[in-house]
Image 1: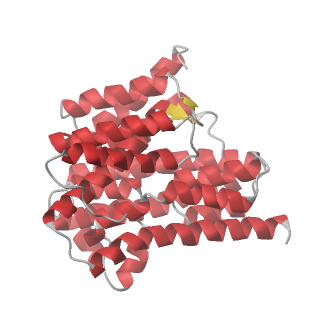
Image 2: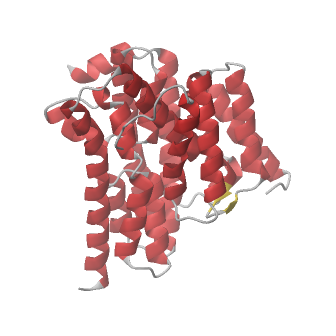
Length: 231
Length: 107
């Protein structure tokens, strides 16, 4: 049974870590769903986005643009810019997504959290297990949270007061930290982060993050020729 | 087309487009063998992107500075990660730091 083999490959600390991330995602979902409906978005839109897109940042952007009176088509394009990074993610962790019919679902589960949990593991079995556990957990928690917020109007007064907004960057930092001990990766990541932050005030969401890839040129240094990768 | 239909179309475009992005990576990889160096480069690319996501999220909100409370929480997470603290400790300490700072009136 596939699900059982997922759990057998995850240790208790990783399982606990994934559970924490999924619960935090669900709480953010509740708050987002309530705020979205409050700003005039229909609850079914919130639920449809959560189930079909399953990428929080782009959904929040979509809802924000539509609520502000923007065109849904503009909102969709803006969301796609934010989600373009899923392509390079898939190139990096293609082995965990699965093959055959599993790939249909596995593809949908690809997101920041599932990718970073996969990258953090050392063997392919563990990468696969972490990816699926986190991906399925978020597939459950994010739409459930968003729907609860949207339909029940369950308003968590101010999630920022509990520091929920800091959990996502803290999760990413905790999980990429081991990879940053490698000098090459660290240089690339730091230059990339600098570029992304510098570009953020001036460019639409999503583009600054993609621009961070120029950092790779600094990581690999001069000795090696520029890699020919089409991403 | 009425507004609801238009919103539905927007949702579907975003959903299909996002799925396509997610599918493209693994599909491209099954078509081409890549060298170990490219493999390393692709793994680095994922880390670089995640680092950019976390840094922009730590520092900015809607293209403006997100405030010292959130930044401090992320810095605490960084120090604890460097000291190899357990994951749950890192994440909860970050949230607690930010929450306490806000309680104390720091934005």
